[in-house]
Image (cartoon, rainbow, N blue to C red):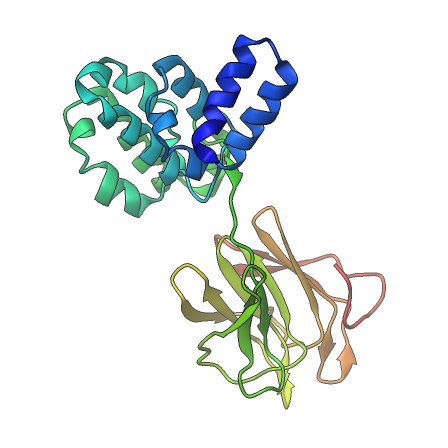
Length: 283
């Protein structure tokens, strides 16, 4: 199916069918990670590839995949496509590529090592990772995120069952246990942000202050300090890179506290209190 998507888009353009072309292009963007591995993509002319790689609506797990698509296209006919290397790689948003991938994979690519302009792009990506969060926000060029591709799972953390951490895969309807080194806890709050599950508060006889974190990519656990006061039955949500907690119970007494965690700095700061105390709040 993915082998014919680009052909449909090109045909729709030739026949002046804008609705069909828009539908085909949207499908190409949505399934870009499959499309760029087809022969159709590798045989595109430079103008169409440049236009495609520049789209914000490409659905990818990471910018690494856009880089991979660009390199695959260049290497398909390297002698004839060498003159277009800078134009093609300029559409890759190097600041959005992980530092590890930049240093181990991109920097070692012979195509890039032999081209000073391309090396400058890689260095700009490296420099981005050295900037403070405030300085990063001031940059616009090359830092607009693409549409994110997710493999969705439904996860359960905590509770009174012997195996208290597991996830459900809607694709195959199977449950899988997740190894958890920490004690069971009840009435905790849980949020997901930037590939990490944060489990806050809860109780095991007494309210827990600690925040346990599970990195879904690395399959690893670590702990951080939670809100300043241990609470169970609290509410939590993640928004714009920050984690908010509200309400809950402190050793039997309801709380009206609202805290904000700056995930990058890793510290909680108090916000104005809620008008009323509450447990099991909705956020």
